[in-house]
Image 1 (cartoon, helix red, strand yellow):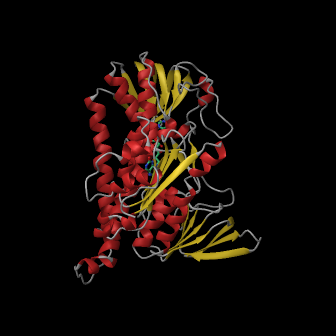
Image 2: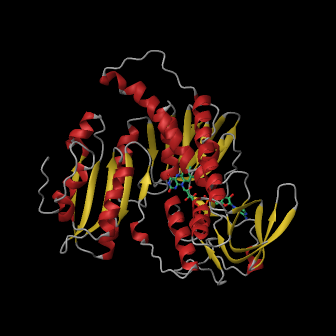
Image 3: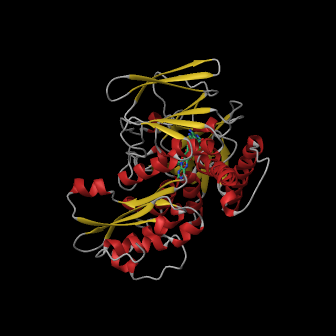
Length: 466
Ligand code: FAD
């Protein structure tokens, strides 16, 4: 079988690349080793985690805030089995949707592990061991990533687990110990904290979500403490031991003392590693970086000119929407178009409550680069909309160039900031100044007014409601 393009991996990078290739008239095949399409994101990542975050948020509100709203409930109970069933239904709707899109775009789906035979031939091996070879003029590798681990931790996938198992627990942990204070650990920790678990987070750095603007980590820590999180920052995990149903995590603090934290489940969420197992990249002559990523140039082309790589398996943020942009980029490059991705304007979101969302430079990065900036902040406590919904934690911070007033970074923690950040992305793509946003009408009452107010604060400190 001969194709113009073969895509290996059907996550958000791969399936989007395949759709765009087909739209542009290329005969396209996609190879996926799992029976369902959609990759990490749809099966064990973005979508199932958000389904559980939504369910647990409903429960938490019913248990803790409904009374203040004048709604009294009795016999409130969590049915975790049903919660997981609903999550699985949501996943199925989404993965079936990708199957439909492949059919609609006449993309041939080959189920099996794809491995290079040479730079134009991919062997597809099914679970039963049978295999067939397919040929592609161009090949796009989108094989994604898998959870990382520490060498001394034995993941038994029962009590010592990764995000994949955390999405399918049969009971709410009494005490969940989370190793790693990044996005995935805090999101999944939030799910179980809202359902009543004590959650202890152990983080090596001195801040949560350490790659984001420092204000965000500090504010998030305050909010999560209110729902039963405890934090061990600047702690280095040295051992994880399991005895029956009890798991003990040992960690050294900054003074060199060892602390022991005992729980019934440990979630290891220390990041993800690029995944190329089984790909037989050597047969195509592909170069990998020392971090195991597939090496690509600025056009996402590997050292073998007809092979491209995108998404989590290459450098850059491990995010679904980054992978999607790259999928479109490569498809359009293949037909001679000149696409562009502004990597500085790929937003990052943490779906805790309050949500954290950011785009552009952090305050720390601006200082490091020696760029003179002004900062405007607006707390949700001063927002009428946030008071009405009782979501007053958090703030919006706008960083603008000291001379030109161009917005250089926007950092938000608060209600629905995951959706609000889109306005900041649009503003920054069009190189708006803080003054531009400050002069635009924002519907009242909405959370988005906080962005306008932070822009007013950044331009001559003229926020109106604080
Ligand atoms: P993947 O989605 O990992 O897909 C790769 C696919 O390739 C897989 O289906 C795999 O089976 C297949 N494959 C691998 N090797 C082969 C082979 N040799 N042959 C055939 N098939 C192969 N990102 C966000 O932007 N927002 C979020 O809210 C978010 N939440 C997340 C929550 C969790 C719990 C996790 C784990 C991740 C989350 N992410 C989120 C990250 C997001 O899932 C990834 O960035 C995204 O899935 C990367 O897409 P990809 O296409 O590069 O790879």
